[in-house]
Length: 219
Image (cartoon, rainbow, N blue to C red; front, top):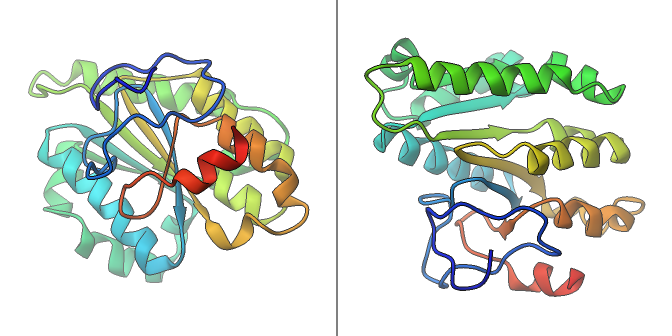
């Protein structure tokens, strides 16, 4: 997609570098382009939680299916706070507008290079959105921390494998993949930065704004 493309347009895959597509005052978390694979560089847990809730809440507001795929769902403390950040949490869960997926099995599969479970989940979500006769917007917003956890644990090749899978399997909607900025300069992670960024369409901060300095490093 060239620099004239606007949020909501379908991205063309195979771009040589993440796309600098929007005006500086636009928030990608609110209006991600259809088919986009977005990397979110965050600085702390507070900013990450706010970014994820903004991304999900805006999707719910638009009648989209929102899917939170996380290893944190097995953490009782996390489930004590996450619901309070999501608009009409219980109601949206019951209606199928919000889906929570335990990421642990997918993480294990990714470790051994088997992404069949990722294919199955994607197909199930698409089918669910299409079969819901009350849904007027079939876009799906997915946020997941599988690749982030792989990066943190220095499983770098599996991390890139998952990120490349997202780029090669676009959907009518968007993927949001968070990564902590504090890790990006550490060895050996920094040797994989180019691969990590090139597997995404857009690089943003926790406010949904482009991060030009990261884009410039890999052009």
